[in-house]
Length: 183
Image (cartoon, rainbow, N blue to C red; front, side, top):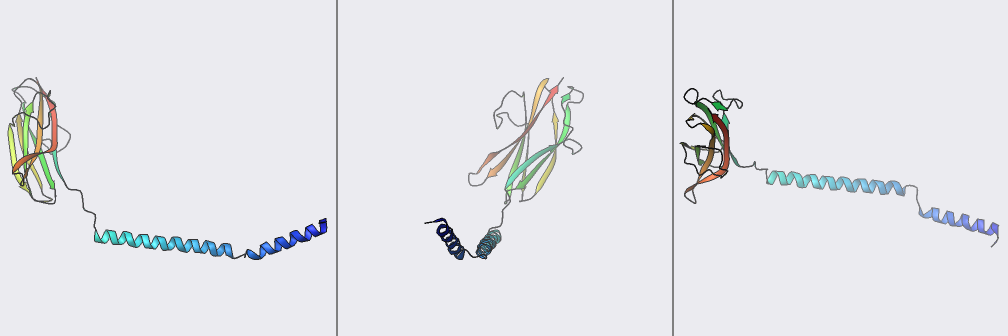
């Protein structure tokens, strides 16, 4: 094959190959990909809307307990008291029921030396407050505490609820405590 024949052969090959590739085929492939993606988005959106409509998101169920100082603020808790002078103080305790049912609650107030780490504390309560709360209900009450032992005194608030199937009080694993030094 001489160079002229080779050149003619290559031109024919290029023309033949060029006949199979249409200039608009790339555009139609891109359009097909875009349409496929849009259809997938529409289907996924429909599934999401259906799921949200038939199975609404349920809020997390919980019980809560919080402490406030005598002014109903969360910042002025007693740290040091002088025995016989200012060793009595008042706090506010709050309990919230977000358990989607009515529950009986018990707040146990305890005092210990701050050494034990057992939970719930094995110390006998110095005060106990009980109340039934409907779902969404909040209960706030005052607690007056008197420190009469020198040294570190840990004030403990433990929340319990009544378990009807078991017919017993159960510790909720909600505990608030702080240490007061008595001099």
